[in-house]
Image (cartoon, rainbow, N blue to C red; front, top):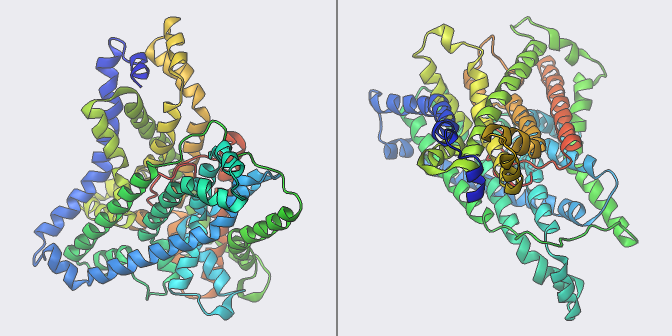
Length: 553
């Protein structure tokens, strides 16, 4: 690391460029993140009849909400682990043609907007699975959470499994251990840190879930996230909303701490990792069963959504898709999609610029300013999207309408949520750039910027492309914070879907499903492009506030 830094600490560069790497993320975070939360806290403190945090917690039954939030998140994490286990084995141990397609199938649910997942499961549970009578409530919510987060377990644990040194397994077998005993004694201990890390991440994601609970909760399921929205926007109770936000922040920070703690104990890199083998004999039967299992959990909800969008009211037709151009009640769905694409592209550009500078500051400079900038860049992970959106509602109310209604507000907030993803991808990528290549370029007369351009960016281009793509997908699917910020000229497609789901009538439901299918198509194209052009699919996440720290996701 020291030599890495030396390559970029030539006279002049060290003095002028190093602070810039850290200052830009700090300024952006202060303007887009600290400001709305500061306004939120100030308004709560100055509100007439304001309650203390403890009084507000008692009034809102916050401890019960905390228990429900933690319980559903823990149940979702365990269920996702059970569903993902066979798929982990398939991707880690079996060599199959079309493995890239399987990775796309696994990854796609993870990057889908949560509101789209809610609509898909509503279509599934009100359609083919109607007899189960679980279309609303916690069972439906947990099923949707499993669908969303299977990719976390599959990517993290299968990557760890592939790194297990097969020589250790061979040594155990040579000492008389059978296949099962060798797996339990050698492989399982090396997978436990990855399993724990993925469970902690899923717990984090599910504890801040909003879109899924709003759509599948049926108005009865309530968590800290939904109660913040209800108290702040529904009732106008600022003190209660802020107090619940404080509890939500503490819960998220605790989950983040656990995820980072267990994630730091990953499987050590192996010089001779597990080699995948082609299926033979009875293994082929097992492979077929796992493929059917993966399709059942990961493809059926999306296929059902597509079919239901083409059969509104039980009759085949395109009325839902024709309604996408209907602007009777304001902006049409296609208009919202155009704005969503534009805002997501701008958000991805901002996220990449700020995230890349942050990653450079973390890996190439150092010092107190750089560390503070890096921490501020990932701090948004500790605050839920709903809390952030609520803060923006209050902060923007103090500005002129022309500023508050600017189309640039939504992209900036979307970028804030995507920046941790870019940082999570680029820091390890920059760390892996060989310092010798920088030394050679510098010895040939290249300046620091030329060295960075010709060495660092060239060697990390694929990671940067993946980071950009996933930042775009996260931005276009953001729902929690954008719900608070959307105005008639800045209504994104996820927000419009949520509004359509709240309106009665089969026509609105058909239009919501058709719009959801469009979002699925956009997300699928982006994920496929990442798999094709990067060949790895490696990225670190969150959706809807994603915790961006899931290695190999």
